[in-house]
Length: 149
Image 1 (tube, helix red, strand yellow):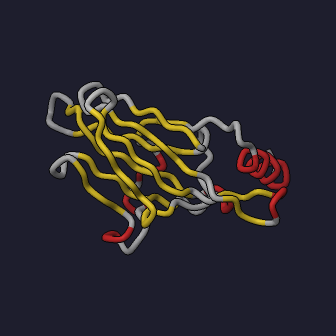
Image 2 (cartoon, rainbow, N blue to C red):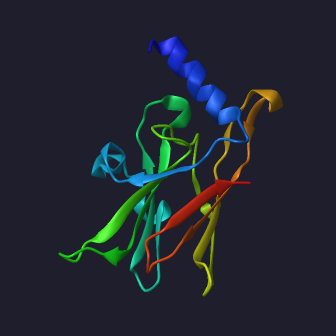
Image 3 (cartoon, one colour):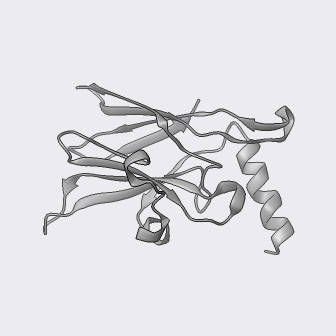
């Protein structure tokens, strides 16, 4: 896909209110070099340090380079936490992830509940549109469900 077509595809996803959020295994997005600095402002821990969230910047595509890293139980057979990345879509990140807006709660029937702003490109509103990313994490099963409001 050439650059112009790729940019058009990214922008169409970013402007779509119906774009599904993708929760995938850590892969090329979860490299240490992608962690956004300063680390103390772009990561947080929960559940006595067993859950860590961190903002990733993969640089490209420029309009959708931010993803959210989730390290959490359950643990595997050698003691490592599961590693997941939340993105706007498969291979496409958010325009930005505002870690300072992060709110967390716990519901025993659901698990941990997180909400944070993910401003995105919106050609219909002259620039950016604030979108609220909400996701739940069940530490027992490892299931993460994510959606945009």
